[in-house]
Structure formats: structure tokens, C-alpha cells
Length: 395
Image 1 (cartoon, one colour):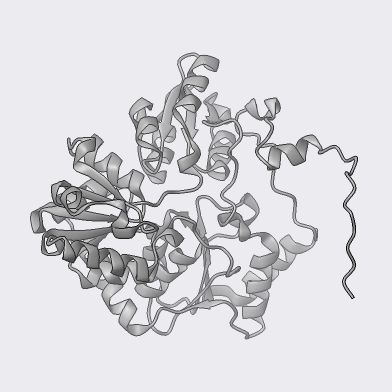
Image 2 (cartoon, one colour):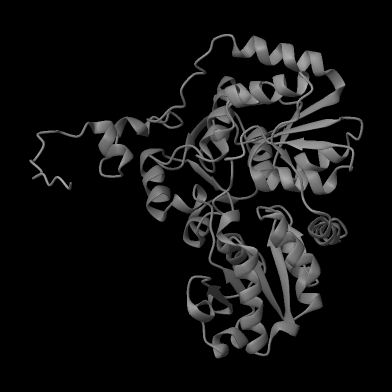
């Protein structure tokens, strides 16, 4: 029997927090710089810190813990090394005696570590749900279809793929198989210089902003030299003539954190903080990068603040965990460091790696049980490693 009811209007008033989460309200208190209205909660179990220490001590040299710069402070505390994704993967490869590599980052980073480490080493991701929205914007099937489109347009032989480190092992393998290379936000110009020595055009995956900013800002191309391939449209939403005319074919992908910074963010912080230096990551939109004072990778941002004079003021356009950590670190030097945007907060996928997940992974390993191992199949690893080796050989 089907029961039909008539819905009655509910007298419910949404809370300010609910409106904020829905994107329908602003929080003026978020202008406190690096304080976020959605601060991460403390671990629920006060004994977690001691449990993590005990498990890590029991494992000793058998475990090597990597912590990406965007991780929570409670996780970074247990990292043997910190850095960006490629630095951490190389650090793992430099520790062949470590049986377990616990990567506190996201999935594509753990894949890269598995590709670069030995067969007898096991890479662990404490939470398998820790993905990357940018990496997920380019699938192997979509990229294969794109290559078919380029082939039909008669230009595939002229195109060299360059894939950002923030991509899946499948995309890295595609890149290696088709004569391309990987790049980081630090060496993107070198990678593109190399690619244009090999061919006339570049297919840049999966972050359109890094590709565009590098081509236009660092290499002197025009915006008209760039087209955006949208995998959700027939033929990428482009005509064969547009593809033939382009130098840079940019995949329609972006970072969900860096892509949220806007020109309004830059103008607003300049109005609020006189003499502020705006420093942003090249994953930001082109107009944001053009309006900034300084642009560079995560490592560049850290080094720039280390070298900054006492009393200087900085608005940083990158993930909030790192910005807040830097603000605390340099407070004693009277360096004022604020988050560029008022409301954009943490990278939600990166922050899936929390202390409870890390403790569970470490305790499982200490008990002899391997959990959440990340393994890249042999064929994929072979071609992905080829692309990575081409990057390592860049002049």
C-alpha cells in the first residue's frame, strides 16, 4: 500500500553556520587573516598522540612517514620529512631500508612514491578517500579520447604531452608512452621549453592554470596561443582549426583550493593591508597571478617568507594549513602573514588524513598487518617512470 502525505512547511530558520556552509552567507570574522571559520576539530581521543608515538617507536626504522605541506599540524608532528609531492616521493626513494612508506598526502602522491621506491617497499595511504579533485579531472579514458581528437585533426604527431605532478599514475603513464614528460610547479617552464624542442604543440594536463600561467607569464606566449580542451564536450568543445592554431592545448582542470582565489581577493587585501605583498601559487587563475607581486611553488613561498625582512606584510594564496603554519612560525619576526581569501579554507581531501587514520595505519603496521597499500601495476609504472625520468633529466 502506498501512503501519500501532504508536506507541511517547516518553521525552521537556518543557522548562520548552515548558511555559511551552503555558500549563502559570509562571516566577517573570517577577516582575521589565517583564522578560519571552519577550523578543524581536535582529535576525539586525547590518547591518540601517545598511541602514535608508541606505534612509530615500535616500528623504528621500518617506517618512514612523509607529510605534505598541506597536512594538519597534528599529522605533520609525526612526519619524518615534509615537502611537496615530488620532493616527498624522492625522499622515500632515498630511504630504501624503510619497509613501510606512510604517505600523509593524497592518492596520486602515494602512487608516485610507489613508482619511485623499490619493489620490496610498501606505500601506505592512511585514508584511501584522500584523493585530489584536480587529478580526478583527467581520466585515462578521457585523455585517450582527446588523443583521438588530436589524431583526427591531423596534429597528434606535433603534440608533446606535459603532465603536472598532480596527476594519476595512469595519466603519467600516458605521458611517458607518448613521448612526454612530467613537471612540477617549480620546473614547468623547463619542461615546456623541452617539450617545444620535441614538437610544435603541448597538451598540458590536468591543470589549465599552471599551463596557461607558465606559457604566458614565463614564456611570452599570448592568451590566444592557448585553448582549453573540455573532456565533457564533443571534440573537447574545439574545432579542428582551433586545435591546429593553438600552441598550448590546456586540459580543463584546476585545483579546488587555488582556483577559488579571485582578483577581488587581491584587491580587497590590498585595500585592507597597506604595503602588503601578494604571493600566490601558479595554480591560481591567470588574472590572480597577473595581479600578484610574487608567484611560485610551495617551496618558493616558504623560502620567500624565510628571506622576507622583519615587519613585512604578506597575503598568501595557497592552502590554509600551510599559511597558518607559516604565520605562526614567523610571528616572532613581526612578519604579518594572512590568507589571501576571506572564506576559502582547507583542502577537504588532503585533510582526510587526520590523526585517527594515521594512528590506525601505524598501529596496524606495528601489529604486522599492512593496510591501505597503494600499488601501481607494472606496465603503468614502467611508462610513468619513463615520464618521471625525462623530467629528472631536464637541463
